[in-house]
Length: 148
Image (cartoon, rainbow, N blue to C red; front, side, top):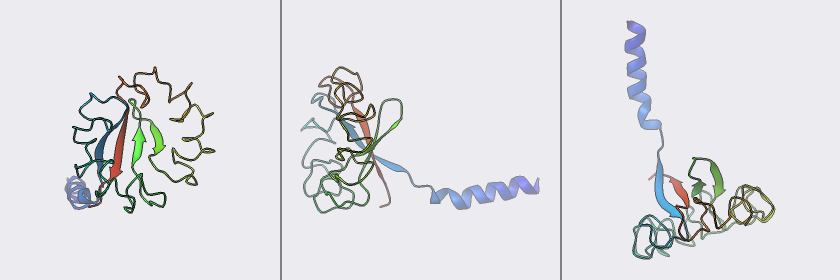
């Protein structure tokens, strides 16, 4: 019984330490999807929304923010996940980060890698239902570490 009480106390004390990821929409060419970054009227596609990677003055869209894919020196860019929850790299303009979708030699940026958004015969195929390059598809989930 004492062990159960100690376990419950530990769970309560350490639960605030868990960092949740912030949902930033779907990386998708589908301009009709409400969650798509290509929908200029949606929460995640509007250049005026604080949660949009398209907002040049926001936390996730500024070229100066450490959490923006538009900053090639960002230390904490958003991460991409496909419809099955598989990690698909960092949404980053850094061509030197090994996990960046902009690294032409990396696993997630090379046009020859099956896991890359840039491989038109693999993960980036425009006919795949979850490909960000499918203009009618669902795209990939964008998440950022929510520390603030």
